[in-house]
Image 1: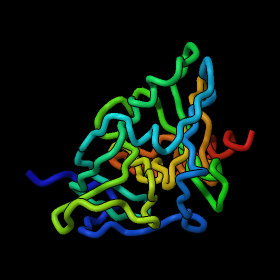
Image 2: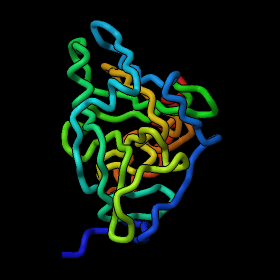
Image 3: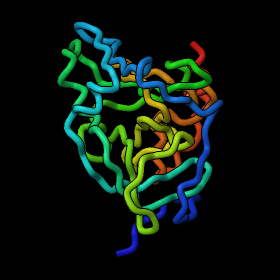
Image 4: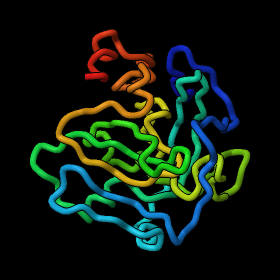
Amino acid sequence: MKKQLPPGQFETDKWPILHEGEVYEFDEKTWTFRLFGEVKEEVTLSYEQVMKLPKTISTIDMHCVTTWSKFDTTFEGIAFREFLRFVELEPDVKYVKIYGYLNKNPLGYSANLPLEALMGDDALFVYRWKDAQHDWQDISPKHGYPLRFIPPASFYLWKGAKWATGICFMKKDEPGYWEQRGYSMTANPFKEERFSSPTEWLRSFF
């Protein structure tokens, strides 16, 4: 059965490389993963601690706002939900921001997402991938090594984060990096939610 292509998209077998800023150079000694925001106690994990977490393998479709879609890429990674074991959330936490490096700033990139949508096998911090043309391999530095968040296919791909560095838990939704620059807060590719409405655009500055 042929998969549904979101409106305004074209299908590709390639995995295009697009990113903001310079490519992060991984250093295991200094790399950390931070869990913070509306939690009882903030937690910082080392690379070794993160990589000891249970692994999930899942096949996820990717839809980029630049109009390409890639079906059936299989990833190995750590499910978002695995990180919840380390923190006790404050009441009424409903949103998160996923953070990643941007020009050496570990909190330079962020994307907002609803917490409820991230509990399945299709919300992964990935480090390996394969598809019909490629055997298992580590993701490259340009693709986000050592850890990249891939969102469910119900979100445009900018809701992920290359060079992921942490999760901020929030009670209220807040715009991330691209949302502050006029992109949709909800980013559903099947509804072609590429850009904010004028009301959302103004709200992001106040």
